[in-house]
Amino acid sequence: MGLPVTLASYSSSVIPILLIVWFMKYLEMFLEKYLPASLKSILKPLLEIFIVGVIGLVVIGQSAPGPAISFPGSCSSSTSTRPGSPCH
Image: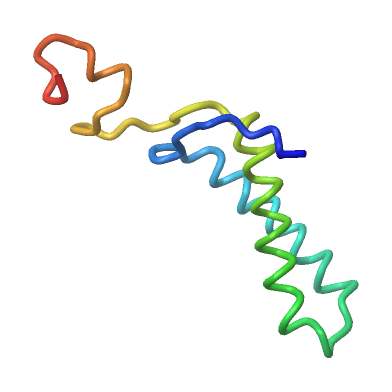
């Protein structure tokens, strides 16, 4: 029983990170509202990291577009096959 996660490199992806942070904002507001004050300091960060990590890998990371920004000089699969490429 594993999670359906495909192997992907998020090294130059910006859109999945922005979507994860946007989701994290709403999760934090939800946890702030429903967690008791005595448990917030321990459970809020723990639940936030666990829930956002799973949702980020399984849902957001898989549905967001691939590498959104390719920086000059970075070796990606599309640039490394071109003749004269510094990665070739």
